[in-house]
Image (cartoon, rainbow, N blue to C red):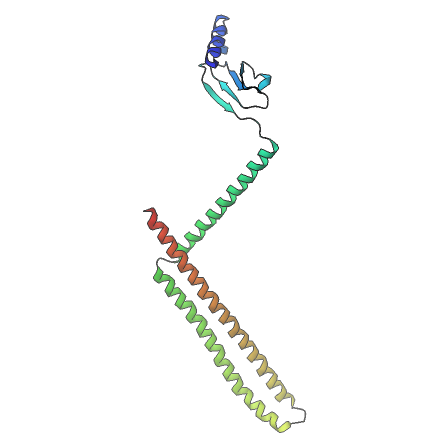
Length: 209
């Protein structure tokens, strides 16, 4: 029906001598409320707010215009788009992290080498702090011995200061040890996770081959 309408419309224009307009001739068709197809050389009023087709001179559909979305449909489409963008963001972030991991390690052995190096450095820092505490306590012992002569009396300023300074530095070194031990645990977790992710990337790459 649409094709016949378009052909009749084109023939009419030719008969009327409207050659230059023929190339631009368009027919618009849609289905009205009852489901009946309605067509016209301008958009029929029954097509307002509805999906419609635009037919070219040959009678074939050249364009399809969707019906305007309702407020609910627009909200749903916007929500879907936000979800799509969030999924894409997560995927992009995962790809970035995976690439950074591959740039850092070339093999499982690399991960173990770097893990051992990091843990060795932390262990060395802990040991150095413990040795420093031993030195301080040895030095503090001298002030403790001097303080024995002043029981129930006011300590000389130099002795009191020596004890305070020693206690302050011991606490500082103990704080360093506590911090390094926490770093040690965090380092172990980090390299465990890096190893897990590296093996997962290798597995996915093998499955794609």
